[in-house]
Image (cartoon, one colour):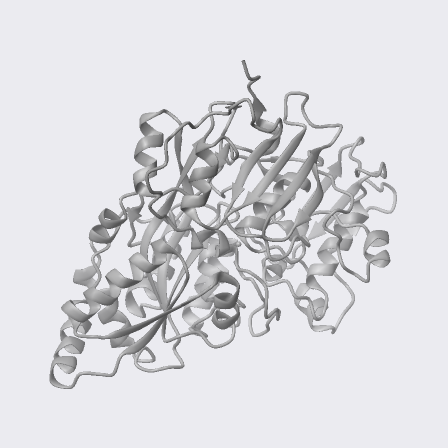
Length: 533
């Protein structure tokens, strides 16, 4: 979850899951289940957390989906990371110093920082991970976030072996990162999994693959992983004594099934909830509603008609009632005019954007009234919420604009494969910020970015992103952000933001200390379990 690929080059990976994987979240009706919401005498002693989808990859270099972020944030610590409240803080770094010109970052690691097999965490472990993410042929679609590092583009292209990341020869605990250009988001980018430490000896023993149950640096280690069923974590010795000894993430895609397990006390933290179930959990005092830095949106394949025409894209943007849609969903989301989500610099409060597109709307509606078109393909990943959203859009575009859609859906992994190869003319997606800077959202439309699924290119927009990267927060950066968003949301309508997410979580009464941060992570070490009476 961002210049997730260098300008004009691509990190290829045909089966990797986007950070937006967590954002395929869907609500469904959970019929007639009797609510208990607390543990019974048969409840297991460990903490059980609901996970909607199995992570595609837990290799830190390749992590890019929300589920994997939830896992890796608990098994690995890096230089810095977000705590349970969403505050960026030092993790394995004892100190972090940034030069006045913003081009050199110096970290000193904690003296006692160790891997679970007892080996010390060294600065070279971070050099190994960053080199692996940036090397020629890297499959990391997030690696472009490290492109400000001096020599990164040449290193990735294989033109040079020089990269501005090195361990201090006189101190194995000191790491120095030199940038070729200023990037005010860079410290936050170091919280991403691709910047976590990796050991060269472990990679060498495993054909350059990072084993899921390999040594860890976090408060927990992954003990076992049964695909599409569960992940089991065991507490490391340096974790707080109050934290659960074992955590099991139970993978359940169906909302009704997950709610039933929660009601039976077999899941303690429920992360996908229907609107109706939210009401009963709220009345029982078990519902937590928290912000999530994410946007649900529509976008287009510019290589396919009719959305290769700007007016058609803008007409769709002018036909959709965002407030009506969020009211239909009924689960607390806020309608969006802004691509950048709530809580991140550059966010724009909602005002109905439809008047901005009136010219294109009137023009295209007139064309379609005179000469109706064959249905246009519109794709989404299978879920009850996505079905509800897309059927509403299908209805509105026909009734209001006269544009007919032919809906098709696929399971999440298949859907991702199509999106990154040959997306439908119109498709839905979700975008979660893995760090709290607008660069991640805006870079998704930079020329050559691996997540630029529309294959759109605009040199003015690209230059604005370069300037936003280097600008300090403040009025100047705010204006650059406004201009960049205006291009993609209003002028060109490359993306149609529909709503901003919230996180609705049901938490059993036996769980204490629950909190979830704006990037969607529950930190296991924050939690404790109330002893059953």
